[in-house]
Structure formats: C-alpha cells, structure tokens
Image (cartoon, rainbow, N blue to C red; front, top):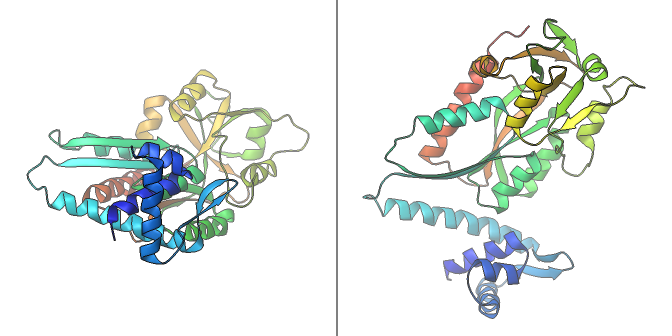
Length: 316
C-alpha cells in the first residue's frame, strides 16, 4: 500500500473534484484516477462516489480518510525527528473566533518565539463552522469554536460526525464592550434589551449552528424589545470592529471578557450585560486521535494563561 496515495485521496476529499485535485497535485487526471482505483482495490472498499455535488466519500471512505490523515500527520512528525540538524521550525495553521484574549495570546506566543526558528504560521479569524471545516479538510493544526451552550448538542453531534476531538477552553458570559465615551459606559450593569433598543450593535454577522440555520439570530432577536428598529452592523474583521467602536461611540458589541490591557490600549470599557441564555463556550478542537506537538501545546498554554487574566477579573 502506497502512502502517497493517501495524500491523493485526502486532496480529492478536500476539493470534491478529481480534476481539481489532479491540478493541485501537479499530475494528470488519468494517473490520479488510476492511483485511487489501485488504493480502493488494495483496501477492498470504495472510497469515493460521484454525485451532483461532486466526488464525495462513502461511509467506509470517511473512516479510511480519517485514518489516512492521522497517518500522514505521523509521517510528518517522523520526518521532523529524522532531521535533527535543521533549524527549529514552527509551521502552524490556527482557526479561531474573533476574540481579544485569543489574539493577545497568539501575539505573546509569537513574541516569545526564538528568532532563529523558521516560522510559517496562518492565523485565521472566522466562524465556528468554517473553523471545523479548516480543521477537518484544510490542514489546520487546531481551532477554537464558540457557541451558545443552548446549542451545545448540535455542535457535539457535528464534531462527532466529522471525527474531531475537543477540549473545553472557557465557559463565560458575554459582556457589552463599548467606547469609554459611550453614553452607557458609566452604568455598571446593562441589559441587552435596553442596549439593542437604543444603540447600534456590532456583530460578526456570520455565526451559524449545525443543522439549524438562523439559530443565533433567533436567540438574540428573542431578547430585543418588540417594535424597535434593528440597528446592526455586521463586521468580519476584529481590528475594524475596534476602530468602529471608537469612531461611533454610540455603538456596542457583545464579546467574551477582554483583557484589561487591551481595553486600556483601545479606550474601551466592558460591562455586565443581562439576557437569558447568556452562557457561551470556547472549545479547542483538533483532528480525531491527534496529539498536540510541543509548539502547539505552548500556544494552548498561553491561551489558558491569557484567559485567566480576563476570567478572574471582577467586572462592574
């Protein structure tokens, strides 16, 4: 059995197209089709089937591909062991929600890295479903997903279906984050209903829950007063969001607790914000069976460290 064929199969699963996979692998399509056929014959199973939505794995194919990805990761680790004289190398792909404590932890992790190390890191801020896709299909080392605990079962089932392992990172209540110049900045405890009725709300705009489209919007819509105009700005970049809060002081956003050092840097305040079901979880996810490397664990430890900086502060 040729393990190079494992790489071919993983690429087909990723692209859902033999033609595109062959192009990405710089090989002729007939040669790729022949290699997959040889692999299927050696295993005695059918890995892929053609559908109107492209080439997708069979049930047996899904199980095989999960094993193949683990084997390919182990082979990469073995190559690292076999090359002890090369410079230390950090190659990492991370997919996360747009959160201040995560970006701070990542920045501090990079700042503490040895300048002599070779480094190539991808840091992608996106929604939970895209993060799951990145970890499962796009070669990301690990990710962090965020969801309301009312939707926990949907995510748990979805992760199991995708053969992804997880570990709790943080359970928290959302706070209202706003400029220190915001009219409500001096009020110690706020309600989401009052804020959303009187001020513009800044949101990520791309939150989604497996199996139930629109679930996140329904959750917050249920807590807005009836008969008031909805003023929501959907923004997909955390840096732009911070600029917006400062430029438009009569705006706010809901977020996990932000480290005080960042609030001071950007002139922000954060206040308790009451609404039903204000219970959220950040979950660390990675491919089923994967063991985190030392460099990955170092970043995870930094995440816990910065989380603690924000988690144990008393908020007004």
